[in-house]
Length: 458
Image 1 (cartoon, one colour):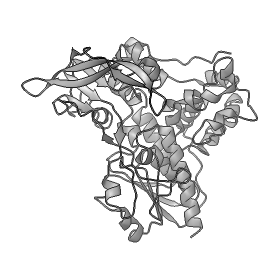
Image 2 (cartoon, rainbow, N blue to C red; image 1 turned 90 degrees about the vertical axis):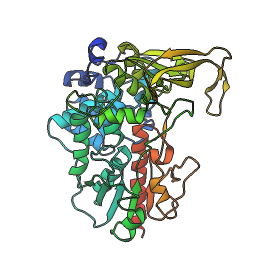
Image 3 (cartoon, helix red, strand yellow; image 1 turned 180 degrees about the horizontal axis):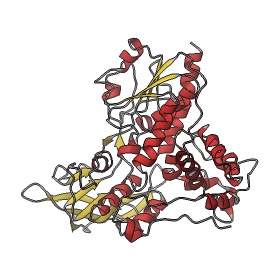
Image 4 (cartoon, one colour; image 1 turned 90 degrees about the horizontal axis):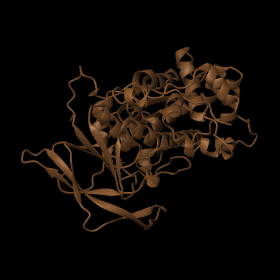
């Protein structure tokens, strides 16, 4: 059976605006799609969900038209259903294990999750909160997906939770990293944050842990019994090639932050950003697609340069498909060797060498190999590096007894988030390096359970 199609903006129209690409299901479409679900007793889809949502149960409620019950069922496990329904890689997780997908289209689990969350928002429904607090205080560092999930789960258990956020707006990567056309900020992110606050969670903004206050002070002087570090990975990586210091070279992190959090895409905002006529984005992940599609909407011709082939692109297939529809040019099996700079210090082009795929590397991906003598130049005025990020070492360097690995990632238990320092837990990108929203949420959920056990057994 074929899944119910989802309505979207036309490619030529959406390429010139920042409005959401996908319109989602209406109630009739959601019910129709939900009726395709087999309600498996041994639900494989749940095994693919990092936060263990009872997928058959919430879909069954949608099938019966009980939309509020569907939302509450999701909210038992997820603090951010409207976000996950939009940006999770369902094709490789829940939908990737759906039995329906063996001989046809898998159930559109993500689109149904989004529908339930959007219906709840539009009808003023919030997740259920704890009846009373238990008197225990926990601090959470970072208001991204890991921090919001950990805080929400602890609040449901009765804990008094305070989130400390370094920026002036809560949401972490949801606010500064993912573009408006994929994840609306006011309509979706801000509302999801409000739902977590409605559980009793306090959020203090403009607090830089390691500078404003240290973790040791939170534990020893502020009365917190445990701390969760969900500060993400915001330190960008570069290639180390000549010309990277030129004007017109951005990290994808900076480029997207200026657009999303600082509203550079709006004409009435004075946030400076290069509105280049020809932009080259280096990288092939979801962030590279986000940066490329943002630059396109700012009026540029955009090329994505990636050193492997299309089959090896790490970005979601949906994002690659949307980028191609909108007119992004993919220069695959190619890699930069130098950024060319004008006399005035601005980018004038980029030198590229062609690649071919050799033997698989340690991860199983085929290693790219340079083809001698194949270098050529592309004219451009802006280069955006999207090569991944690592955690800022400020927190780990100012916390006594907190172990990190060679990449400056905090070492923490995958099972419960415990670190080398008693009472301190960590999860998400601060531990793994840059990964997906849903994996960060799974880590926040595991850490909440670990913190509850830690405090309960003291």
